[in-house]
Image (cartoon, rainbow over all chains, first blue to last red; front, side, top):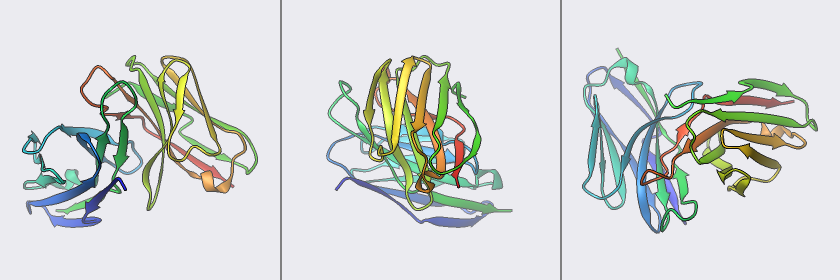
Length: 114
Length: 114
């Protein structure tokens, strides 16, 4: 069964304490893996797309990496404003001639304490 | 921010009444989606559209219908609302001109069915 899992479910960090969030996936054909940030009461905000194993993307204190079965979102020296829920999603499919299924993970709720 | 608006932003309705949610985009993206987000379930696809008058079902489509008569508007209708349809509804858009279906989300509609 195709699925996307994320761990931990919740993470509490002190400001400046670096850590990583995990996204593990089981799909038949990966076309892309996405990371989103979601603040309370708002829609998910797109962060990164990763296409193949070994790829890395960075944005400010965030760095996303991808292997064949999982992705990590590394947060370096986090600040309180990084507090949010981080969602991972996987696109599977054979091409763009029809809709490629996107499966969302349940998210990791990150709290950064000053 | 992607130009996506949703209306209404909040709605309380009674069981058995019809409800229509509207999503409007100014990005001229071909694909539009309706999701619901519930605690413990994450984001689940209700219906999607790949062009004007072209729609298809997602994983939780029972009790919902959609219409798209213009590129910019995608309507979600609950024909007879039930308490199980209390949720937060998100509209999303994507552009098949990119390599993958990375999606951009609207601000959400919080629907309560009493």
